Length: 128
Image (cartoon, rainbow, N blue to C red; front, side, top):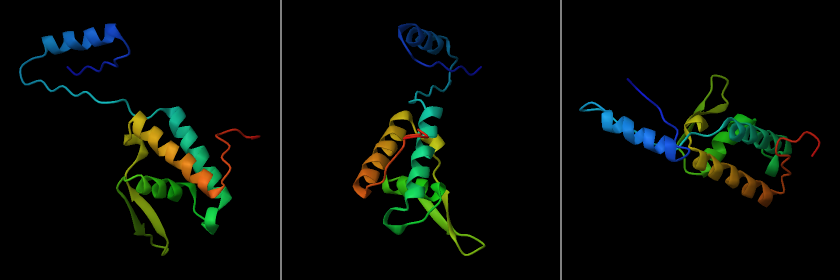
């Protein structure tokens, strides 16, 4: 029987210890940082859309390509393949696999890069 415990405080930590104490032989325990949040993901796509509209350095890419470019710049494995129409498209690493802290690092990198390029980011605000 698989169980998931999100450790938010002492009670959950004690529950996780109790589950481990009752675990059968050869049970597998995995502890990992939580994945990125929906709010983080929404912010990412807002930032990528702002960058796409700004066309920094004359680069015209859809948000999906900008995402892959930033993932690559942050050291994540991203590949580009040639599409059937002769245009490259990104494949590879997915941001849904990033932890909250990894995702925060990616967003901070985007903020820094955009500031260097003079790109105005609205941070999801329509009238900013």
